[in-house]
Amino acid sequence: MASGTEDAANRYGRLDVWPAAELMTALWEGQTRALAACVPALPAVAAAVEAAAGRLSGVSMSGGQGRLVYAGAGSSAMVAALDGMDLGPTFDWPAERLVLLIAGGLDLSRGLAGAAEDDEGAGRADAGRVGISAADVVVGLSASGASAYTVGVLRAAREAGALTMGIASSAGSPLLEAVEHPVLTATGAEVIAGSTRLGAGTAQKVVLNLFSTGVMTALGNVYDNLMINVRPENAKLRRRCTAMVARIAGVDEDAAGTALERHGDVRRAVLGLAGLDGADIDRLLTETGGNLRRAMERARPTPRK
Image (tube, rainbow, N blue to C red; front, side):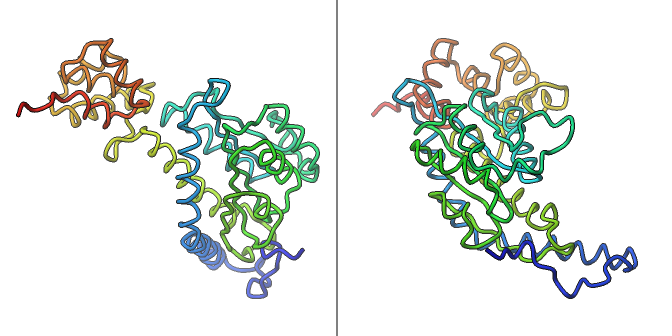
């Protein structure tokens, strides 16, 4: 199967002797083409966001909650890992609800294992090893859409009933055919032929940014445009959390800081400033699935007729 990501564009012949300024312009143009390739994919990404949020907000038959599973090989795996590892600090996504499946394993001390991407059986085995089930959402990335490892993960995941999404830059590729939610970013030939860490990699990063942010927003981790579940692990983030509490609750930053110190996080601090005690805060957040907006609506007293 021919892949646009592997084609060599004639316009970049003798690229190795181009002046640096012309090379930078060509590389930048490749990046802008990658961004443009994401626009037609937005409806597919939106559909995947809605489906994934619905799946992850539920409770499985075993009583647990579903996980977000990212799978990839090579630079695609690094894009997936970068997005996944940021979900905890940014949205307080639990570590036990994130799974990273990388061809060749997670030990990257010796670099990426290039040959590992050709092993579909290893992908299937890894999917079985982590116990992918119908409660999970599995996202696979491959620029060419032909990474056997990633396709193996996705095929096994779909057979297990998981919700599956694939991101690739080659139409009709095995990866896109293996999933319920295919997302095509038709980035075409790279400036440096086959170097998919360039345009295709940028498109993957953009789509995954949009997808994960959309899912986390739908799951109640954002209020207005504020990341209310960010972990206040350093001084900058503690100041940000204080400012969010002040803005949402309509109090000054001294009162917000006191409430944040007492209650521990933005949602609880806001509800505490609304006059609720700890037990009522816990109850409301449990009843609303942690959604601050819905919890605040329930906390407001019903007007007398």
